[in-house]
Length: 279
Length: 319
Image (cartoon, rainbow over all chains, first blue to last red; front, side, top):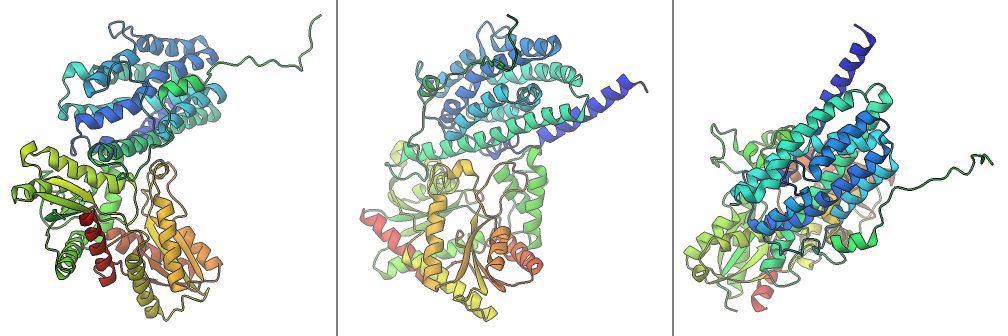
């Protein structure tokens, strides 16, 4: 067997094992998703879920853009760019994914224009913060692992469960297009990604970075789903009983609008002052 | 006081009788556990692991039987005080489900009810989750046929009757070992269910457990005690409340324990977490440490506990 073929075999074995690890991660198999079929959720539950999930949808594109700037090769840039084009709305009637998601939010009961005024569970904020950190501070392959396998290989499985719950809650197909469209698009993204990743799995260090990124993202995802669970059950208590009856407090939780005002996200210019000038 | 009914809500445990979720029936314990984690291939290994705990103890749980005994004991205590209330018990994770019992209660003529939440420490995944089921039941009814939800009993993590009952159970278990809790040679492990940190962040769960533990240890004048959390899912990759019971037991031994008395202060009845995760796995760890071990009974229907619950219901009726 040639060196190149041997390398490709090793890479594909690693990626197959990573796919298996992702498919059994507790973030992908969180009980809030696993119970969608057996423990029907109401429209109110999905309204709460949507308010917490929207900030993730709205920030994903920015993570990708930041990672694109750091991609070391045209091949990597191509994969990121292809996914970004979808995110910008290329295959969804010109509407970007955040706009699509807003349609779902309105169907779930959110008032148009108020989508970013929802108090966010701390784990929602932590999820977004962690992904910016990964895409800005970690090595490129850790970022690729987080946004690639960590997202594209987990979302179809998670969304399949969510869609079952959405249908049981009575949402029409038109109202949940964001979810169904994503299941299809992410199957494509995942397949493109696998091909792109083969070239980046040559060394144990590269494989370790990709795996680390995927697991960092999924760990944040597991925490996120617990945050959503916390919100759903406690908001139901707050809706139905006088103040003070819920075990959970939402005191001090900030909204997406406040988060945008508070955070400045930018790629940094880092000047190496040890380099001599040529004057 | 106008409420005519007490609705007792709790987690639930598997009892004999197919829930009809799967055909063929994989067994009550499987349906119960997969109902908690979800029918999801991603968690199949964890579901199988927990089902084995149930099988090791006969395949079922006494959770519902004990909870119903507690509810009827509270009803009897209230009757003794001259308060006549109907009582209904419903569960979050097993039949009879809370929402179904709310509907049955309404159909049985209940006009107004108060709710007693059977968990000593508050987190959204227990306290709020059970209350959400009550709302689900009310939502199933036409507005004209809905009984009035008059209130929810206050939580009771620091109430003297609860602390007295726990202390009494612990003293009995220590007595079996001939252990003196006032000596550092007896370690007192006070256990509660582990909860993921994202849930803890918004609640007083760990603070309430710490307070229960402190009150129990003070009542017993225990010299060497520690809180330990148990039953966290082995496949979770995130932080849960710590220390886990094994680490807490290690610390007790380091502080001089030659015997350990374990008490489930976060549980109200001898369910499988108490009997297996604490009773069996705790004992195994004690054997590894080379210390004697005794597990205290849960509060179950301890008279002091029942009397305290009746106080809570009475207070809710008076509000």
